[in-house]
Amino acid sequence: MGAISEYGPNLSPALGMKFICYPNRARATPKRVRRARYPRNDMAFEFTTSFHKESLESFRAYKRYAERAIEQLSDEDLFRVASPGGNSIAIIVKHMTGNMRSRFTNFLTEDGEKPWRNRDTEFEAPLSTREAMMQDWEDGWAVVFRELGALTDDDMSRTVTVRGDPHSIMQAILRQVAHYAQHVGQIVLLAKQYKGDEWISPSIPRGQSEAFNRRVKAGEIPQR
Image (cartoon, rainbow, N blue to C red; front, side, top):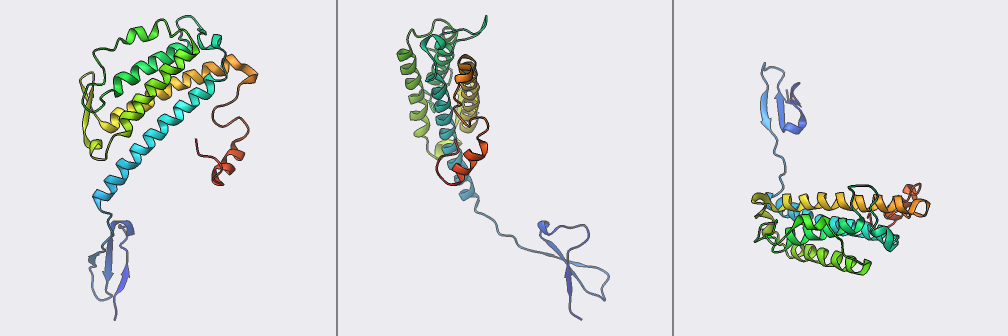
């Protein structure tokens, strides 16, 4: 009589094991089923390349969100302090750009906390005009995009330091994505409070999620 193939009671097909059961035998003979495997090098290459691209897109998206909020505000709003001990949008921008220059100047070869940075002064007197603030904003982001844009796939396996603490390249980048997202969120929240009913959302307006999804699926607009 021919063999009857079935999966054993305690095994899953995902484990790649089959029992070949014969009616006249008390035991089952295990048979390993080969599974296709992706080349590890290809997977690593795809992962690092995707991470690099996605991190740049995330930075660009947060930059746009902040700019869409800032452009709605008067000069007075940019320098307004909403509560005692708080920071104006102009101060938040000054801190962000100071951080950008320190973290990303000579990103691969120098510590991310530069000896020439004076962090405390970033929370003191802001630049005096909108034009000066926005120029500082553009200059800070230019450092980020220049240094990250120059990274190669081989660079992604390197180590950098921040205040002497070793970071993988991915860890260092993720740290800054989170940091800038936090401050962009502060800028957007302050701007929304200042504009009140005149506020225009920099992302998906309230009540328009379905329309936004349809346009994304149709290829009319990007995800962000």
